[in-house]
Length: 509
Image (cartoon, rainbow, N blue to C red; front, side, top):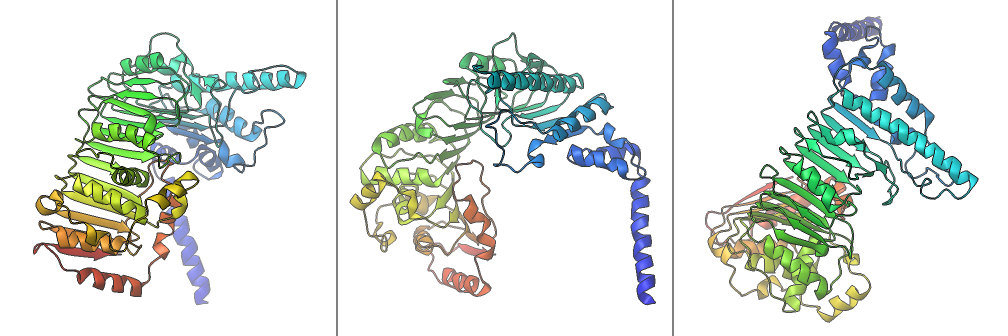
């Protein structure tokens, strides 16, 4: 009998909760529905009391990838578009009632690949299908622009990769309005078609977009309030000149070796460069404060590549915060072994993202020795792997092999930052990896003004670029440590002698 009463109380409680939702103002319910994927918001028409409130949602989000298994789509028989997905968009736009849209998101793999070369009957049919689809996409874009959308997020890459020359042309209306605040474009082509005027735009993200230097300049000139610009593997760029004093954040992922990109950004405060950084010429970055550099997988242990990187590092040497990737640290190792001069760095904070191997030790040593004003050192440690050295690189590391066991004990040269400025050290991630304890011991014994050293296994670096190749290892970290192992490592860390009497060690999991 008690179970029956319990069941009734539970049912009554659930009904009460439903009643609370149904008593909310319609504007509040519509606002809540705006945070759902649109296909889920539409389904609430079946919920009593909701009716057509989904038609008043201020955010619209359509993701084609939710209608198929990514990687299993076959385009050998021409372009394939999921009719359920297309019909959803058609019906939503037809029935949508609000006069303004806050955010419109579309993720849909589309290109004009078959339209490039119409040789046979099949090609003609495929091309006709593509052109009809392009016309429909244009109507969607015009619809949201008429609703004065604030954040436009259009991704025509979907789960694929487009090719330069077959991208859909961005309608001119997107580049001439006074209401867009944020614009994300992927898989488009932007061709010259009149003046560009985006008076309210604060953020632009372009991914695999086809444009040239002239159009990029027109975009920058037409966005007086632009604060942040992100360019990922965009085709056709050779020079990037940013003079707008309002633009403070720049992200560039340069994906094309043998293609140089010149960057001048005298007012930028935060700069992140990734990809083929050895093909990036930084002409002016005189105001930069926070810098991140990520090498692509095309890195080689060749001095000819490292010379260009040295010029880049020298341009960034006065940044207060510097974040190099694991490959950049290897570049400093190469400089050390080949007697290549290392620049003098003025960094106050150094953030190392490192998949630690013995070959990173000389690079870390060089960073510390040539950063005399360093006050804060942060390290995110992931498991080291030696398969990063392949082909000719294997011969290189054999030629420059060294004693890693006693490496830090052999470092007798003066480290100015350790004796005068370094006050805070933070080490996160796989703190039990080889070489970590030896490095910690060296720092504790030499850092005479150190005030705080923090160890944590719970804080991990989230990858900001696709080149962050050991991100998968970070995801496995939470299962890596046992309580016994943590206790043993903490006791060992606390037993290391300290050169600074004020140094305090904090340890957490």
